[in-house]
Length: 80
Image 1 (tube, rainbow, N blue to C red):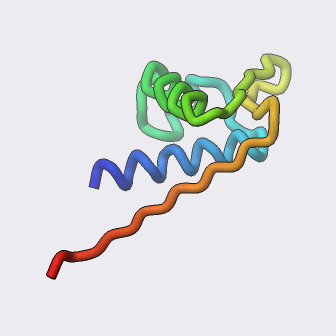
Image 2 (image 1 turned 120 degrees about the horizontal axis):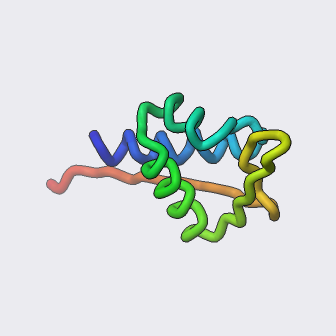
């Protein structure tokens, strides 16, 4: 289940960045029950996927510099 939790975390962070309502890194860490370093790691994962993420200190939020669409698909089947 750790994989699904990680995917859900990425999806939730992506949504907060889209609506530009993330808060500070420390606030994000609290919201996701992670340490700040782990938040930076998830942000780096999104960047590796092509997201241009910036931080606005005045508004205290992360935002996408360019439009970014995140699609995650999981297909599972049992072998017969």
